[in-house]
Length: 147
View 1: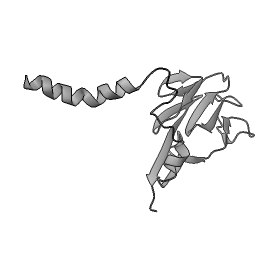
View 2: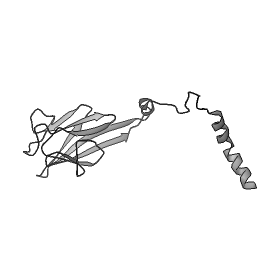
View 3: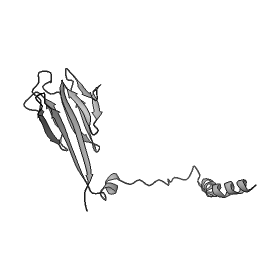
View 4: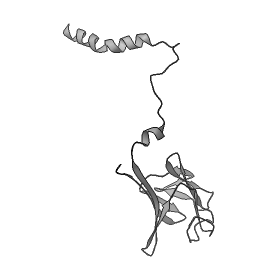
């Protein structure tokens, strides 16, 4: 008997709320908050870069920004990879919706992220990318800063 009373007491607020909500009421109890408003209060610094692994043991670091970058063999590319297996315009990296994405530009040898051939893919910290045989590691650092 005591258990039934406790259950009724616990469920009473929920039942009264459900009884007051009707399908013809055009409102929601969910409030939409813009991401910018929420994140502007959290001070953080963001840094993203490619670590291009050289066969000679020397690695290159290339900082990524908000601008689109084309990767390829052509001197016109923002990131130039001087390998025969890399297409002239092999792939593109863009910063969209708060994340970096890599896209294959119909290259001959493809773009692989963590061993899987991709056409378009969001990049995550420490992803291993292969562009025409060239190995690249994507690094993304987000650190809180002091106010």
